[in-house]
Each structure stands twice: as C-alpha cells, then as structure tokens.
Length: 147
Image 1 (cartoon, rainbow, N blue to C red):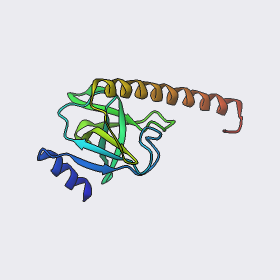
Image 2 (tube, rainbow, N blue to C red):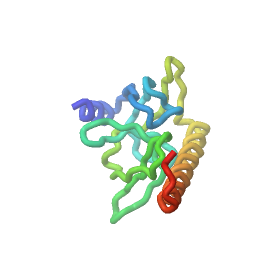
Image 3 (tube, helix red, strand yellow):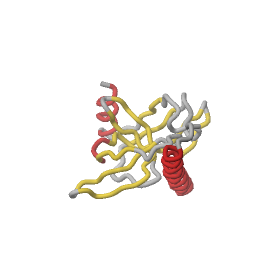
C-alpha cells in the first residue's frame, strides 16, 4: 500500500522522503538513512532509484540500461551486494533519489559531481560483483571452503 501511495504522490509532482532499511546500499546509504525521491522522466546508469519489488520499495543503483523489444530494462543492485544484480522493467521505478539524509546530514546527489560519484560507485560495485562471482566459481572447482 505504501508503494502505491508514494508512486501517486510522486506522479502528482511532489517529492517524498523515504526511509532506508537494510544494508544493501551501505556504506553509501546505511540503515536508517532517508532518501528524497522524485519522479524522473529518464533513469541513467549511476542513478539511485526506488523501485517496486513484490509490493515493497527497494532502493538500488542502476548499473546498466538497455532496450529489450522496444522496452527499457534496468540492471539494478545494491552497492554492498556481491551478486550481479537484478534486471527490472523501467515501469517498476517509482522515482529517482535526488538527495540523501545520513543521520541528519543532507546532501544533494542530483548534481554533476553526485552523478559522477554514482557512475564510479556503480561501475566499481558491478566489477567487484563480477570478480567475486568468478572467485566463487574457481573455489567451487577447487573445492575450497567459502570465505
């Protein structure tokens, strides 16, 4: 229910502060942070978005964007995830994060510097996820215990 309320609020042209729960975006967005979300006409790699997943709001970074049969698909993942991420349809995006509040300290992230930081973080986390997946495959082949 909260998901549809936030989506309707943003569609009406408003912005909303949304609490962050969990550690998937740590350390960039630690548990207890808040994000200011707006409805965005276009989402780009490096952007942090709030999207709907099984009726819940999820806050993850967009790592890649591609067109699939005329529709836009976004590869999203948490900065702290080891995996490759999850492809979602762009219609599941509720909004884009334009500011963060980390324990009372607010910062805009929709600036050129914020977008550049997002691209670097996204690329770094994507590469780290791919490298860790390769290490896991090698471990399985060598039958070494997981770390």
